[in-house]
Image (cartoon, rainbow, N blue to C red):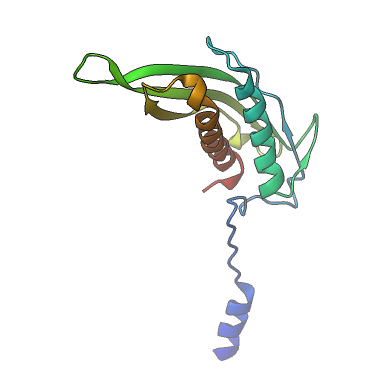
Length: 163
């Protein structure tokens, strides 16, 4: 009985990953292709595209052992930035907006060429609220950095983390 317990204990292993990519089977998945996401929203802020595209590629480089490929990858990610909008969110007693919501929305098409059951097309978004007394130009770079980080984390979790 003791030998059986030792054998069972030795045969079990628990794998933890702080990056979330622990469920990715590197014996099957070797490459990822991430296309640049063009901005297709009504309002265009050019640095958004560059920031988003670089952060999305960086998260896969930092948190997986996948090699970047230009085509024919095991995993393919493509899409477009479909929304960059601001809305008055709250109105002060004087009738003017007191806070404004800035939202970024991204459409993602994910193809898993090893297991097409994992394929999807989905929207990801994030928003931040800022004081309406501030100009968008004064806060947008910081807010974009925060929202891009949030959205790329969402995409990463949906594509390779498989919680």
